[in-house]
Length: 242
Image (cartoon, rainbow, N blue to C red):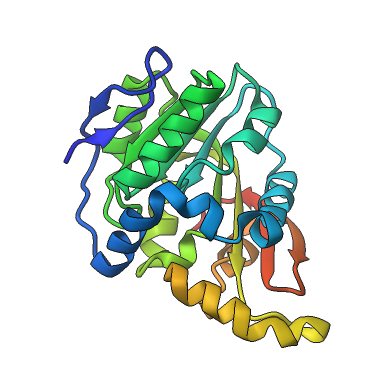
């Protein structure tokens, strides 16, 4: 299956970038089935949109920057990112699901965004040098200024490798933002069954705490939370020490 690149000149030209060997076929099939309805069924606007807003605020991308959107799905981050980076910036959306990327491409085409590059590949399995070359072929830069992972790292079986591959695509002083989920705390504990159900339906590991990588490997960390602690947000500057 060819990877899908939304190029500056066309948004829909197919190319091959990295591999698409998926380790979790059940999760893959779930997103294949629900991709056309994901925005409606995922609880995005009552719950999860708040995390995206806070995550992008914490990441603080600026005009003209290139941002990796890790596990971009249907492109729900794109409008918020476009407000920050403008037409002179670039979004590189990476996802392993062709069907989710199809929805992301439709979103970009409907809005007339020509600064979106879409790559179908697995963050755990990809070769950063190969992907960097493909990004360049699609009109982007070999290294990006920032990376954002919203509700995606907790889906990955090998988050350590995904982090390594992600930072391999970033400049030395890039910023990384992670938004993900845990059980609610404090007053919101009564929502725990609903939060666990949402994580289970999406295939997320609610105990993964992938934002800890930002705490441990970045400096100048910005922290936030939402929805009774269910949503955890971290962003910081990479040190490229690990």
